[in-house]
Length: 382
Image 1: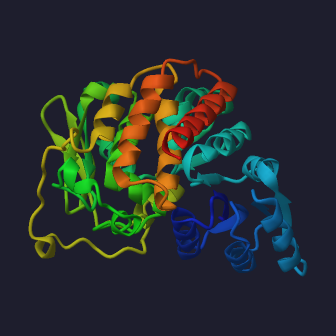
Image 2 (image 1 turned 30 degrees about the vertical axis):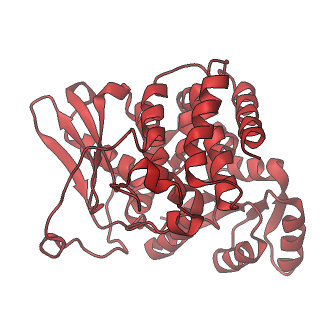
Image 3 (image 1 turned 90 degrees about the horizontal axis):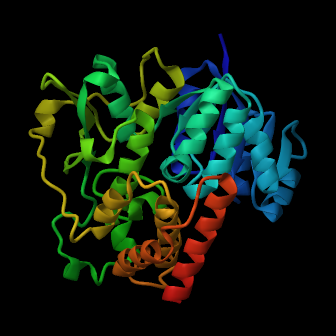
């Protein structure tokens, strides 16, 4: 029986792999696709998968796409409202992979449709609006399956026991390209250096977040919302091989973890097919070829954004939103070579100190705190 899937952020790394996975599975039809401004790639995807609806947030790119798809039946929408309409169009699964806080409102729109599965590949949505997302899931009878490799691993490990039996969560991190470096050595890091992740092929923003270890800090907060655990019961482990993707320690001392090669198509496919497992696209794991698995304690002094996120985790004021917004702004400036690598650390910490105590209970407040954090960073660094 055919199922339908909507892909929010279809031209990004996760979106492209989702479409590849859907094609492999063979029993998914594409209902709708959204992207930011890449009209050329979205045209290719529309011609290949024939969605009923496509939306581009950039108005000029959407106009271009309408011309490109004039000979098809694909309906093209534009702007944020167009993306929200596409997100709210019913499908069995909505995979949300829009980068950053921009994914929050489309994810909430997707949930509002009701009675569907949300496959979430956007940690910032939970970091900033986890309370809103969880309330909406309950109200609209939707289930959420995590797509991040670490949280998918935890999700799978939790199948071995109940929530009340969990002692702690083991959240692994590769350590990024600068594992073992000291703060003084990070001064000369360039975007090209930061984008050379040793194990994973990801989008630019998440790759830089991995290099600063902000990504792992965001994942701590994401895990708190997904699995209802406090930050003190989440232990971060540096695991350079990226084979053990995360795990759970239960009250009897048993540790259950999920292992596999670093391939995002595995957690994407599971989010689409759960509770079933089917033949996947990825290569089988050969532990003899890997040789050994190693683990280390993180360095939250050098990588101070990890330490900041650990302190911010659990706060109900604006601190998580400000931290995320400031980081998004600083990473963007760094990728455009307008600031240095260590400026990211310093500006985010300053923003949280200056703005973190405000209120961020509603979606409107979250978006306002986010704007304030971005403006603070831009003013501070440019």
